[in-house]
Length: 327
Length: 272
Image 1 (tube, each protein chain N blue to C red):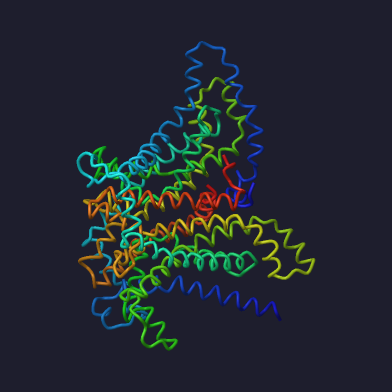
Image 2 (image 1 turned 180 degrees about the vertical axis):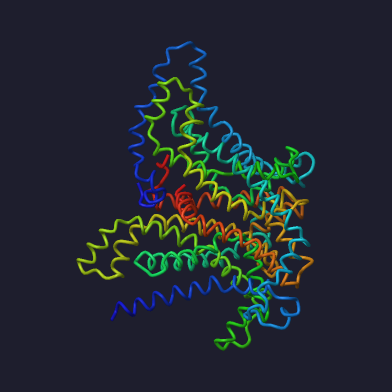
């Protein structure tokens, strides 16, 4: 079992999944005993299904049914009203890949993708620093993490205010001698950097807390032993911390990829996708709900879904030590 | 010597990062207490003259009806959380305590569902919701918040594994049926996990923007009521910042009091 899942829930983490599996055979006693009347056995057999039924029904209704419908819509030309009956085959998909105004939007994801590496690097640095004894470490941890909890619309306004011409950022830059700052959101060549920066501000805290949790679940004795052997902080990081959290870094990487492909809130709230800041998800949503081309929008959504699934599959191959055994 | 240099660098970077986090929030707080005239004449980094000038907050609350946003959010939050906890713990009970045909499949389906990007799939989910006649009702949001929660089920399962099966067996010998065991024994013991889920999920619902924006256009939730400041109040930053502060303050309070649970819930959720 991985270090991360060990450290996660203090109580449950203590029990290895192996132990859980080993425990199972003891239990079905209730079932083996079932020599009672047939109906009672039937009820008993149905019990687990009754318990899981609501969750399963909602899962199918709100996740799998829409996903299946989406594939069907994507093969049709449909406005979202009336019957879905003008089958067009793969034409919508051809349009997704050939219409430059649609596919080129993926380029915008690169800003966020690069941003998420900055984010992971910062998070890793601060998690490492705070895992050694530090004054006010709880306070620093709280401050670094807090942005992640803030309402996305509120963050949008906070940064619209920060980026205003002559606003806070320009004033602070003025202190260090930058006299003619750019239009942070108005200039199309800068806007995506500003938005990606906002995204880094918002999400670094999450990565940081995940990394910190992983680092803290590494046994203390390892550091002590390393210190006795004369290993400095860098070597402790290189040979103890980094291997210990490799898996959570892999997980964060996959989140970075799928996250940067499906960026939505920050640019939608702050610029509504203007000035070349539109992302693939914004385009999809607008195609569906403003231009009323549900067929095309579904094709876009399916393309995104397939990309995310492929990336996840690759990640599972690269980091095969998975936590699927958790259950 | 080397240690002190390292220590200085460490604290300098920590203080620098804190500055970067807190500055954007602080200036918004400053602006929210300024009068219109004061806002126009002072710089963003100048603190307000009167820290007790609550006029902007009153104006913002009344003008864009943030009050009903808070009420609606509370209603949706309460119902969705209760639903999530009951549905989630029941599912977790079935999955952890029974060996039934299709158990693996159900698990796999929950797992794969976490990968589907939720915003884009609204293209098709929207048709289901409007087909059910729930468009523009709070029920749509409640249903979506209850239905999309897989992480909660994982947290429950994880925690349930630490509750000894011997308890179930003892109760069964005493003649308790499965429902009684779930309701009287498992559910009360799951309290810490329920608290974790309720807090994490509560924050997520409070912050959710797109679902209420799409499914409940005629009423405000907290996010959408704030979003409505974008159009008509374009330049009135003293009002917008006051509204923003009102949305952030409950989060600050929740964070200060519930830190431990939040950290725990996030690390548990990420290992889904």
